[in-house]
Length: 72
Image (cartoon, rainbow, N blue to C red):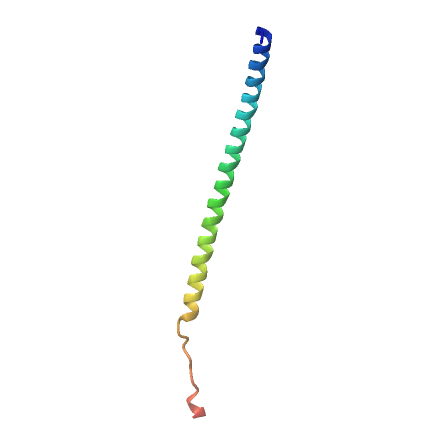
């Protein structure tokens, strides 16, 4: 290989390195954004589960039943 071929190879390596770095940065940014969405949805699910537990707890409480004593 002569000097020009080495220069071309180095140029291609530099170009590909820059392209891959840009892709990695974009993908990591996307992953961070999606992780944020997952955290928000997990919080929402937890809140909904807690609300469901509260609502079920209210249904288990005994209701005051009044009986008409005149009917006996």
